[in-house]
Length: 308
Image 1 (cartoon, rainbow, N blue to C red):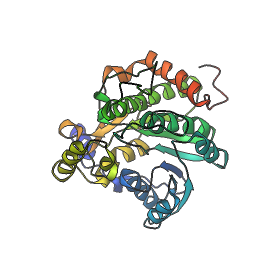
Image 2: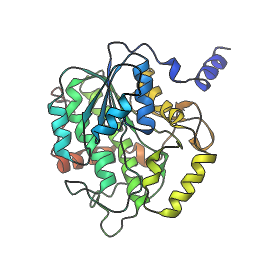
Image 3: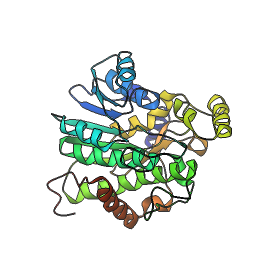
Image 4: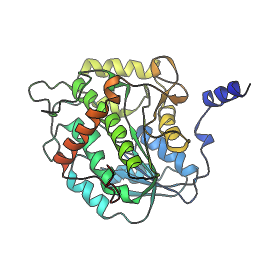
């Protein structure tokens, strides 16, 4: 009977089940729209002080004004490592929860300010640098938003050329960046554990959530298909934020991956979900970490990391 009650509780879990987060601080990248905004709104309503880390301050302030609770807005451009460093250097005080949510999806080929392929540079390298620079302030957990798209594409990191020179497609680059999010979480948790840190690293994916992210895809046919899917298959941004909120608030093991429990993990209540073998490859995770340090110039963020 207890198992049935636990299963029912999991199926009905929603943002109203968040614990009282009074006195907690949450930093959310890309909190001005989509699942980032939905997560920010839910955490603020639960009592957390929520920091909107956004590229566009005007849009961030407009979004924060719609939230009931304690908020502030700070500039952060993940496609510019100087901006990432500026954000981290200005930070003072503890961070209970860092949510690496911002992302770009299936863009035409382009580069970040530092010369990285835009999706890998924004979705992975920007968050890699931000997490390591802020890690001395973090005292509970880091949640990184990945995607079921990590199962697509080449299913591996192109370590010799993450820019995918001459092989770029929007889908391949997006898939690589989302696989990188999971490998980053895996290696981050290994390092945290080896360092004796109580901080946990987790990942989540929203399933198919109807947000404006799909509107920026390069292929007009793909945009049309996604628009139809948004109307028929997708859950709204509040539903898409549930896996993030679940990972952010529930007592889960480090390196857990949370997604919707419905068909194809497209929608539904949050639950622990699987990943492809390449996303659990510890050797690839370590290699990606080293490469990311070399590319960003940002090293492991804890001083107690001698055991790593």
